Amino acid sequence: MSTAPVSLPRRAARRARALLNESPLGNWLERRGQLRAARSWTDADEALRTFYAALVGPGDLVFDVGANVGNRTKVFLRLGARVVAIEPQPSCVLLLVEAFGAHPLFTIVREALGAASGEAEMRVSNAATISSMSSRWIEAVRSSGRFAAYRWGRTISVPVTTLDALIERYGAPAFVKIDVEGYELEVLRGLSRAVRCVSFEFTPECADAASSCVARLESLGYERFNYSAGESMRWASGAWFDASTARALLESRRGDVRAFGDVYARVHAP
Image 1 (tube, rainbow, N blue to C red):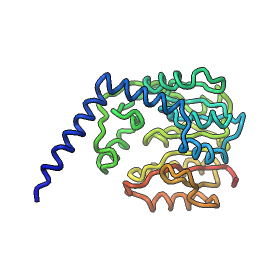
Image 2: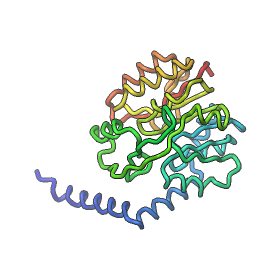
Image 3: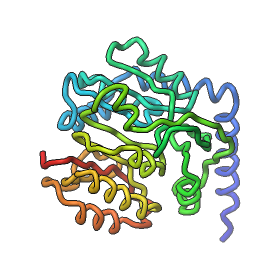
Image 4: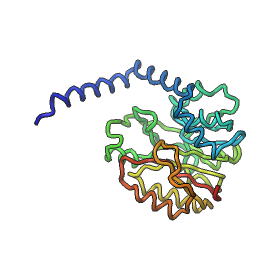
């Protein structure tokens, strides 16, 4: 049975939305929406605040690595933390400054993080939240179908610093949130000593890289791990577990395009 009467209108609608999103009007509308979201407070934000309150308290220093459009930055600020937002995309930097620049606890770092200081290429997507410095990650999530509808059609050169350099500049953070679309291992390679707590995003298409992140953290002295699936803001386990269990958990989700989440690591059990 032919599906043409259904698929063609849908395809045309998707194409029309894509053309709007890439137009100056579409860019303006998207930016206005992102700014409203950064300045508003929703039930989802409150769920984030409740979750992160177990890790971050008033006066704590937080590094928001891959701050993007600020959905975590605003939560950390609401918790009373001093937030260093690390973001290399110029459009996102402008948004973050407009939304939070007047806040006394907010600092912006207009750089990427990696294993060493210098410069690197970032592939910019038509969705800012999935721009990446990892071509391997881009090909994996496009091939799996997770982000098959998106494009990474532009490349920019961005300055790169390291977590060690940021610690020298701002002090040791209580928490480091890393969400850099497949470049998490390179970020962790720029850290040579443990801080209280670190999280990194996990994508099952790149399970080997996630396992390497756990190994890197273990080598720095992190002993206890946990996991939060998707945007559930719930712990996978009531008790934190060791690195071997963390690797087994990640391996069990290998290739599952429905899955993603964040792995958390602490030096000691909470």
